[in-house]
Image 1 (cartoon, rainbow, N blue to C red):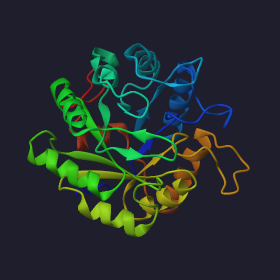
Image 2 (spheres, one colour):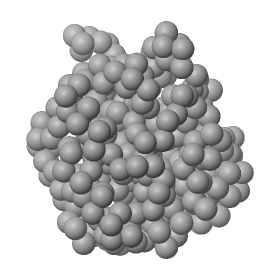
Image 3 (spheres, rainbow, N blue to C red):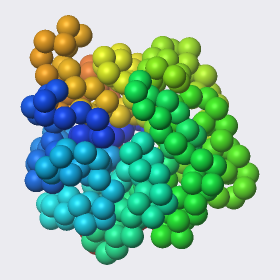
Length: 289
């Protein structure tokens, strides 16, 4: 395991599910996503996990040109922020669509792309990730020198990552998002978190995410025990457990900063994160070395 004293904050501003009817603060249009990311940078984050949305329908979108608009707007002001694009299979599962954001180059090139390590069921929808799709996306990222952001919803997905490592498809260092609390996967408690962290391969860095009202609990545990956090409206649209206050991304981030301060943990800068993951330094040089 790679020890990191400073706190990784992986910011997830919008995701695929929340819409403005549920929470008016959910950023959907490119300019809204850009504004939330730039505000997050002012507060302090390490990386951002981007989803593109159709600005009219609010539906998830895979098109590289939408991602290009968002990435361009961010990098105009924040040239070192580590940017990951979603390659999710929840709403579309053709390789050409899922890999489309990986085709961006130059100042628009993402540093990372998400790689969910197996199929899974959400409350009302399946995310289909066949072995061939996982393989093809991993190979495409290796070809384009983009680092996979490894998404694991249970321990079996970590084991599948180890399988890909044995096949020489994934290269160290590894970055894992461990996502807890989904209805059909590992639950949001210390036992499940501990099993998954213990199962990680050598040369791994990890963050914990909690779905819904589990976000604060799991983020707090991660901060206390030396891990990183994934936080934002993608995973949780409420600020309080009574669901009386719709969250703003900025409020969620400020709360994380307060908890980190109480634990005497500084926030990891994008520059430090780039060195740990062997990413290029930013400022017109993006992707992995």
